[in-house]
Image 1 (cartoon, rainbow over the protein chains, first blue to last red):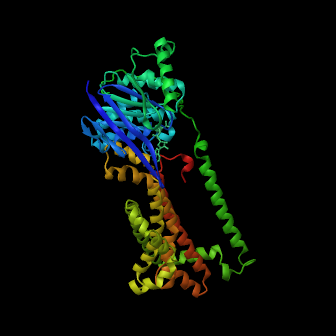
Image 2 (image 1 turned 45 degrees about the vertical axis):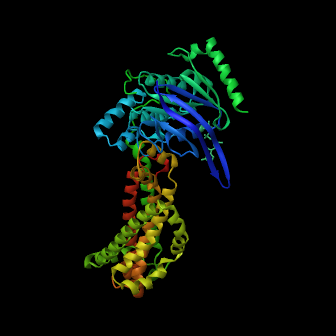
Image 3 (image 1 turned 120 degrees about the vertical axis):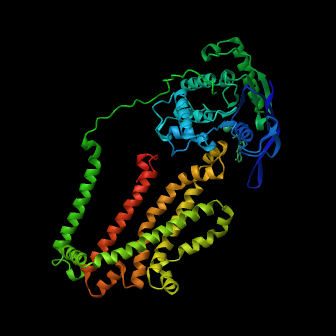
Length: 254
Length: 283
Ligand SMILES: Nc1ncnc2c1ncn2[C@@H]1O[C@H](COP(=O)(O)OP(=O)(O)OP(=O)(O)O)[C@@H](O)[C@H]1O
Ligand SMILES: [Mg+2]
């Protein structure tokens, strides 16, 4: 496998009044094509900042991000980014929200519609095509965002705590859904979370970040797939990994 | 993920039941009906009190009375006075309103996309906005004469500022996250403007359009009061000069009908673009 996403010495400093806030310092990461990498870190350690930089939304203070060997200078359509907060257009109904990326790329209306309907079915929202975002529950909105992210058939997915605010059951469902959607797709996923269990359940590899994006641990997860959350929890291998991650997170906070 | 196969049936996701409601005519329209009944009762009551009180409590040469106003309207309708003057004023109001709101909305969008220019101009715009527009009437007479142009511009100036300020406020409140979302989809400035900024600032622009309606009327009528021999403003001052209070009130009735029609039209537009908002937030 080849390196798809290569992050070298990434530093981001925000300016607020007369002070600089370093959100990320000298962050390095290599992501293989087709892999599922989870980034685990405490709140405020710079995870969202890192994804914003990877997606090209904001420019780094120093350092480079290369994708397929070419530097990222702005958002690109092969990379889809599910941000931490909901960004559905409140004036568009579910179907038109999902169609939006295709609309911008100039796909014909019929194709757009067929693809959107297909995705609506896959994320289990059939019957809600004509609903506006405010008429949906938080979990349903996340599904719409998920469908919108997938509609343009991106090569790489960046996801920022996509299931953070959901109840445990729904979270498990959506995680399973995501894995099922990802398998055999050949897509590369960078998934940010602060939940150890989620990181272990989903990732081929877990990168634990400490303060300001310092890498404390980078480990392959060799748990066999498909991973069932209930069985996993009692497996000794998983328990050991869990302990290792907890330790790493604690170390990262210092 | 183009190769995903079977569709998931995750019905555990707390989906609300959709139930067909069997609502009777009264349940569906009852509220609207009772509100309209109350409105009609109120206006009928007011007219009745006015009619009875005039001549007993008030002097009808000052307050007129509904029957006289009605007679005057019928007379003016028959001899064409009403339509001639209303048509002039209506044209001034509509042209002024259209000109002012088009200019205000356009400049609102353009200036907010040039933040530095806006910051430079901001104090000047506020200073101009603070000028009582009536004070401009004499100047406009010098510039444009006493024909319709001057009244159209007087109406347009006030409308312009209201629509401009509200549109600009609407544009500035657009959620950054939504703009970033469009950028992530590969959208350029054009997509951002058309798919995010325009719909998101619609609420602000519509507020401007709504509050501007009475000012379009004020502008036109003031213009006619100051200098004119046609239009409803002229009709008011002419009737008042002849101590014809019925005539004054009849003209006021016509003016409020024009305002109501304009309100209704903007309300339709509002309803059309605000469908996505919760029912409580709609007006
Ligand atoms: N626009 C900004 N301006 C100033 N400081 C910022 C900005 N964005 C982020 N920061 C700072 O950078 C640090 C990292 O923020 P970031 O949003 O990346 O954290 P995070 O790891 O995603 O946290 P969470 O898990 O809570 O989402 C924080 O301390 C925050 O104060
Ligand atoms: Mg974050």
